Length: 293
Length: 271
Image 1 (tube, chains in turn yellow, blue):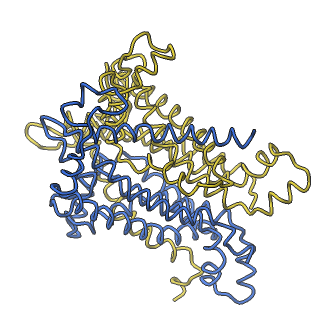
Image 2 (cartoon, one colour):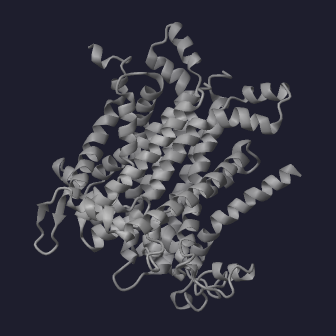
Image 3 (cartoon, chains in turn blue, orange):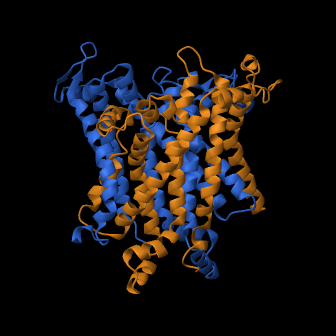
């Protein structure tokens, strides 16, 4: 009886563990095992090749290196704007105002649009035949004439990034807004009575109290964005000239265009490894932070 | 002054958010023959409701929406309940294996889903749930759980533990203290989790496309793919279906935002 007591943490974790092990871990291990097999498209057979395919990624795959740089740019730029704009919006909405209950659901719309539709929508927006953006960019002097940014290898990545920012702002807004609203008013009132300035309240009370939510959302969103291929696949397909190819789209191409699941799994493991390093670094940061509550 | 600039900024956000949606709305009302010739005008010279008629009356979209609603609502409820339990354990107990659980949950998010679709399909075949809404609900729950657990944990971490301990000293059992003290304090977090999981399930395409074959079991993102054939895309109908699909989500958000807004004012600290 002792093991199923309400004071035992595993009692609360059991349902989660059953779901994760059965539907995520088991498939994940299978997916990783692909890396050690060579998938032959013609005969449909798999041969065990050990670590052979790992050599290729280390020594002779320049597309992997360029995708890695593109992934860093895609992930950091998208994350920076999603977080700062989402946080700003959460602060604007925090105290509420007349009509907020009508406006708030509208602001959350992008998060509910399926990602391939987001891609299609912004393809329309960026196309000079069907969308206003090229003309707006011409009007403010960024472009000499209305052109499609998605066909310009120098700047094409900004297309999917803008779409991704549009999509991701509400995520941070919802999460940070909920965290902000969980701070008891009494804390703010006490600080105001002690004459603490608005900036110092924000710096020393608000931010530390919502720091756990900030860190976990930054961690998980970075992982998701690095893995997020749909918008790019729809908008540019990784082109022009691989200028928008990130690791996630490269994996998709390798697995579903070239049908090389073995090598796709090798790239996936490389991505997994890098994301684990990032997660480890953020985890250390979390441990160093003082606990406020 | 400050108030006006605040409203100005919110209006700026609204325009950025709604303009692309407005553009899709415009496309949904534009007759096919004007689609490109009037591609860049803000409002077409002629308006048609044919696309909406086709989607609602001629297509199977009412069925797709119903399926999407069943799947999203069940996934949101199931995931949130399970995640409340797990988040509570991760927040309130120090135990051997805690870090292992957290790291495992994180790692599940780091591997590309396209690489594990086939193995998941095999698991679903094994438990005989391929091509059913129930199977889709279970898969969505599994993939939304890790983040939902972290989210609930962070909200439990942020709620004062002292009140809960005081209640337990006063004779409440752990579950009573959780139900009467901690959960009301975490209502904003529960609302955010529900909203997050609901929309994630509502807009998911890849699993829905791979695991569902029967028309009668399709969710709306998979149904929308019917407009994309090998040769052409029916833009007008696709835009109409997308606009219609946003309505239930807005209603759902309008409903759950009450929790996110209320939060502490309805909670235990003032009661």
